[in-house]
Figure (cartoon, rainbow, N blue to C red):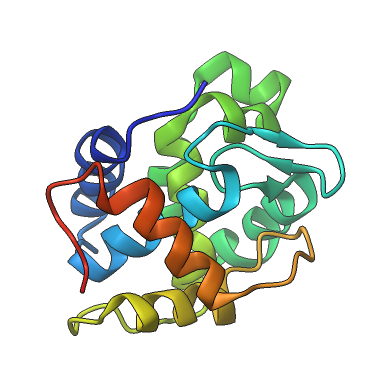
Length: 167
């Protein structure tokens, strides 16, 4: 499958963050870079080795843990996030939403960053965004994080296809 970086930015990430009232260019670029790094923008939506699911390769265990230990503390936020999921499919296979529902999985990826209370209101360059990913994106896979690799992936998959760029 796969998705163009510009489409992911304009149709999924930006509207999600705006709807949540947490939009910033840093948050937008962080989520876009995370999707690029984790799944090559959806080219690989399941990793058998790490059990990572969807654009952001969030494991079923991390998904459950985010609901049980983080979102439970914020009922309004949990309700908003649950509202993004399919009514019937979520009840049958909640972890499947991480693969099939781009807005929902983007929201869960944002919950990982939100939980870490990262600062996204000040402009950051690409190396700083890569460092945020390396330090805070725990999707449950246990995969080593390399900020330089994030930068290379961002430059190759995002910068050539999006109008907005990071220095």
